[in-house]
Length: 327
Length: 278
View (cartoon, helix red, strand yellow):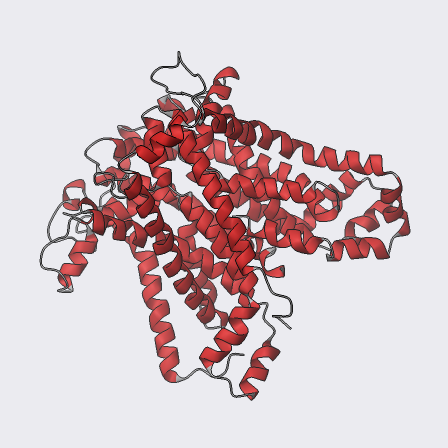
């Protein structure tokens, strides 16, 4: 969710705030430069409450949890919590379901992100132009964002119910199927169903971010393109997409991290079933936690962090803006 | 703007927008309709797209047999207090991150980003032990403390975006007039920041209201449960009572949706104000 942190971090150095501080107001600005201790104390005092909360209730448990990955830490037997090296990691990889879980995670992430991006982009492009009731329309399609992933899972679990679900009823009425489908009992259709639910939820975020980025493109660029007689698709690929590529890249990065780490929806919809076939890495982690093996669950958690960090670094390197692209 | 739209183009556009709107709204319509049917009619063919007999039986069951009123109250207290406190604390950190340049700043921003990357499950065990030591397990105050910490990183980033949209000169002028930095922040900046503060609070509130796993871990007794924990209890059994479940879902969704609708413009601005500058 921290699109903003990474992107604004880049701009602050030369940001408007700093510039105006250098320019005017000798008294205020000068004083802050002279008494650096006082300035440091001010910064510390303002940051302290936030830092204390996050350190105590987020970072401390995370680090403590991280070291459990190298210990024998089972709720069923807490007499022996000795260090076991990489045993928990070996157990993760040796699990027969591990292959399925990894494959599902890939399907879950790619199968969610691609339709979300495409549909979100289309919505944003079409919402750019004013039309009557546009505000109401936006408010209506943005609301899935206010619902918890867990509850969305429950909602779609009811829609896809094999006997009394409305999806089967609608498909039968439309003549597309003859018999009701047991959506959540068959691994293949269960995966399709959770993906549909996640697309329903996630398109909004892309639409918001892309729409905001589109609104920052100067109209003159389009006017010039129109004068040159550029076609619609050419305008899209040579003006629109290059101009908003930073936002696009950051949104995709964040959403990948976030979808990867989003067990709530699957947890509410299928609980990982049928027969473990819709488990992704993070729901798998929940299952192992519930079985009380905190050591192995933490090992899994560290693998997630490592994978996401590597992905984030490579992704940022690959999509970093080349100089002059925008000029 | 983007050239002229052809008639065919407009038809495609509005068809797409219409289909998407239906797809978005329908699940909510369906859960609401289900919740208003008499319990027997829910499992009745053919499925009724409009209740034949309206009934509030599913709702009255929630407040009679189940103790849903208590859960709603708990969620309301926890989300309001945690959301407001986190907003206040994040104001201070966001202000510093927007207005000062210092060496550890990018490290702090990275630390905020990393909180999003780590699966929360890795922290649950140790957090439970910590709260046991502090005697704050199964305690609303304990859950509030944890939620404050959960909200702070993103809230800080969001408010920072709002601060950066306000010219420095505003509080600098106040400081030249002799106000301290802190007083200037409260007397001069706060009123200007009001939309941002409201948006940040609502965002925090919705996040706390929707949070499941921490609440399931930390709250045991029935009188302390929050709404998501109660919903989780509904599905843990083998048979889901879909009548009560849909009524509970409607009651859970309603408050956050109303809040979101009320502040959606500001929230969108909050989400995007930083991102589109880069």
